[in-house]
Structures are given as C-alpha cells and as structure tokens.
Amino acid sequence: MQAIEKSLYPIVCNVNNYLSSYILVFLLVGIGLWYSIKTKFVQIRCFKEGFHRFFHIFTINGDKEKSGMSSFQALATAIAAQVGTGNIVGASGAILTGGPGAIFWMWIIAFFGMATIYAEATLAIKTREVDVNGHIQGGPVYYIKKAFPGKGGIFLAGFFAVAIILAVGFMGIMVQANSIGSTVENAFGIPSWVSGAVLVVLCAVVFLGNVQRLASVTEKIVPLMASIFILGTFVVLICRIKYIPATFGMIFKYAFRPQAIIGGAFGTAIKTAVSQGAKRGLFSNEAGMGTTPHAHAQANVKDPHEQGVCAMMGVFVDTFVVLTLNALVIISTLYTKDGILSTGIIPASIGKSNLAQVAFGTVFGNGFGAAFVAACLFFFAFSTMLSWNMFGKINAIYMFGRKNKTVCTVIYSLIGLVFVFTGTLVSNDFVWEVQDMLNNLMVIPNVAALFALTGMVVSKGKK
Image 1 (tube, helix red, strand yellow):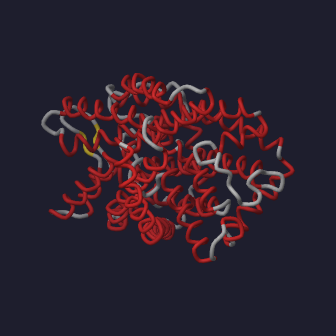
Image 2 (cartoon, rainbow, N blue to C red):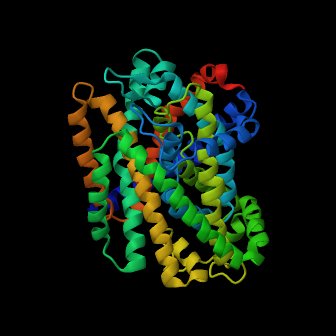
Image 3 (cartoon, one colour):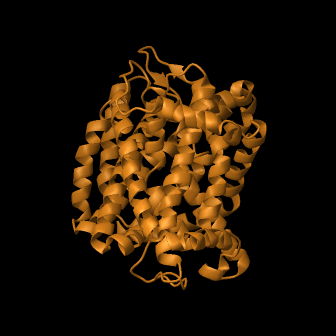
C-alpha cells in the first residue's frame, strides 16, 4: 500500500496543481459570476427570502415522506455533505499552505457559489424523474443529458456518474474516515483502525437503508453538530476578542500579499493562496461540484425557486458561518503576535489534521481542545459520509442498477463500507490529493451543463 501511494502521490499532485491553478478557479468563478449576472445576483436579491424560508421549514422531527424528502430534510442532507472535514481539516490545509489570505478567496468562491448552487438545485428539481415505484431520481446526470442530447450527453453523464461514484462514494468517504481516525487517535490515543471498525457498523445501518432513513438522521444530526461547534468557537473567540480585528486584517492583507507569510515570489504565492481557496472552497461548500443537487432533487416542493433559495443557505451556513468561525479561531490563536505560527514557520508537529485541535487547545487546554475538535469532526464527517453515500448510490443505480436496483444498492454499499475502513489505514495527504483530483474532474461536465441550461434556470428563477 505504501509503495503504491509513494509512486502515485507526485502524479496526482501534479494533476491537481494544474487543474486547481489553471482550470478550476476560472470554471468556479466563471459559472458563479455568470449566474450572478443572469439571476440579477440572486444571492443578494433573494437572501432574505432564503433566510426566512430556512427557519420556516426548520424541524428536527419532520413528517415521514412517502417518497423523497421534505424541503428541510433535503437541505439538511445537502448541508450534511457540505459541513464536513472541509470546514475543519480543509480550511486548516488552506491556511497552512496558502496563508490566512486563502480564507478571503474561499469567501469569494462561496459568494459566487451561492448563485451556482441556486442553479444546480433549480435544475435538479426541473429535470428529476420518478420511477415506476414512485421513487425520485435526480441529479446532474439528468440535467447533463438534458443539456446535451445525443451520444455526447450520454458520455458526459456517464463520465460524471463514474467520477462521483469514485470521488464521494468511495474516495470521499475515505477522506472523512481518515480525518476521524487521525483526530480521534490524536485526542484519545485510540488506534485509527478501531475508529474505522466502529464507523463501518454505524454507516452500515444507514448505507443499507432508504432515502427516508437518511433524511431522518441528517435532520437531527446537522442542527445539533452545528450548534455545538458554533458554541465552542464563540467561547474561544470571546477569550481572544482583542485579536479579532487583527485576525480579519490578516485575512484581507495576506489575500493580496501572501508572500509575506508563506514565502516565495509574489506570483507563486498569490497563485498558491487563490488555488488553495478555490480547491478547499469547492471541497467545503461543493457549489459547482454537482453533489448537493442529488439531495435537492428529493425535495417535495412545488416551485424549483423555493429549493434554490434554500440551497443558497447551505453554502452560507457552510462557508460564511461554520468555516469562517473555525478559520477565525485558528488565525486568532496561532497567527496573531503571540501565536506559534506568527512568524510563518510551521513546526513539524503541526499539520492540517491537527491544526484546529492545537488552536482550540490554546484556550480549552490541549486535552479538551483535541477532544472537542475530534468530537465535532466525528459528527461532521459521519454525516457527510452518509450523504455522499447516497449521492454515489444514485449514480451507481443510473449506471449499473436499472435492471436490479436492490442488488446494485447492496453491492455498492458493501464496497463503500470497505473504503470506510481502508480510509483509516492510509496516509492523510495521499487520500486528500486523490479526492481533490476527482472533485476537480467532476466540475467540468457539471459546469458545462450549467452553462448550457441557463435559459431553463432563469425562465422561472426570477422572482
């Protein structure tokens, strides 16, 4: 296993560097800017509507749907996918590699991403299908085929389906399991393989269930996990309140002068900061990646616009609330003048997998800080694994399970459980790089379809 990782790692890194530096940034910002203009900045114009609708549909014990999900259950399932290791480990990696300024570029990606995800959710509702048993099937493969009729659309839909099965259904849950195993081992000294075994049992209960079982779990886990994490960050930020102005100052300063803290020439440093913001921003809020439309397609709503504005709230909660609070904790405790990273020199003992634990430990104490982050990350990553399994499952059925959906679901879920356990055994860096590469590849056919179907989005998207 280690020999394979060692040989593949530099190849995957090179592919990722090219995609994130020269393609991903332009695609994500481009599609977000495009839909911002075409919808007359729906993320601003309809933000109040989305905010009110979010609290109107909020519940932790919704009615059991005969088919699909309630609007909040669909949103909770999407947020479960969005709020995961990307908010803690991903943000940590972006800050370590691209400096505090990478967070600014994550905000930019998220702002335009709110318009992108509005389009994704709208198209998911408009192009979804209902099978003979009344089960809703929807997601990018359906609107990709709508965008490109004929063999070209079939190929692109198939390419996306295979990419997402590998990206989130298999490699993605490895990332989540890997992060859980490493943080739990760091906090409690429990071997990562033990965490892997426990995760397999917990995941199997939901993986082998139906959409309604997943909806019932996510609508309860998401509000609870977000509330606990937000409360913890507020405690830290109150204790470090005198450093908050300097923290925001560093985010804006190093967004445009990253070489001052991460070293190197200006051009290389700024490219690193922007690409890290784009890459980790995509992994965090998933706007443009084509994952969350699978959840929004399940929403029992009459007007696609309603779910579109709800989808925007998912990006807002993910990036502008949870991720930002985590970033503020890290920067205010570790990068301000009394922080251990204030000089820009990163000790060998600190990496993206434990950076947040070190940050929270400066206020909570090393032991409790590590335990708090490990507990939060467990719920974040676990809920993401559940949602990602569903997203991959929908595409596995599309590709391989049309004749026998049950057999396809069981085989796919069992393979997924193997990846859950394997994720706790492999190295952190390799898993992240492979996941990033597959994420990047998914963006290409999804964004192409979003451009092609602009008319379908804005025809009823204006309100």
